[in-house]
Amino acid sequence: RGSIAACSSSTRGVFGGGYAPGFSNVIDYITIATTGNTTDFGDLTVARYGLAACSSSTRGVFGGGAAAITNTIDYITIATTANATDFGDLTVARFYLAACSNGHGGLS
Image (tube, rainbow, N blue to C red; front, side, top):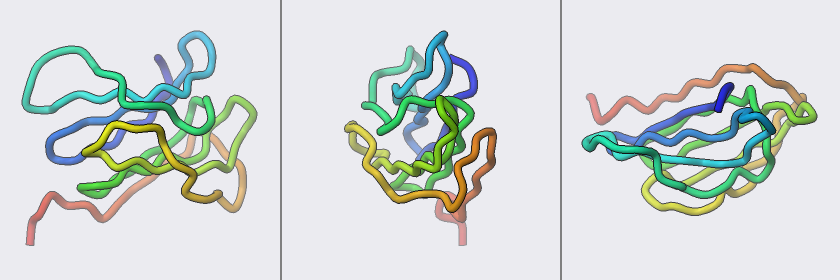
């Protein structure tokens, strides 16, 4: 898949959306401390590519993207596997955007 978004906790990396060769709503994850292939996590609420993601140590957020350019924001709880839940909307529909967070891995 191309044009995916990724986020993580200290133990799990999560990848969502993309184009492969159609628009994807798939969310996959890896366990960072092990080797191996991705495992199915669940689905985004809307299939799209060119979305952005950010995370805290517990929650991942996926926003924007295109299949039709969307303002959708979804969230997941990184420690559990399940479909994404609607978080709200961006003020403007957009794709190929960026995201950031204040998650810092427990540093003080």
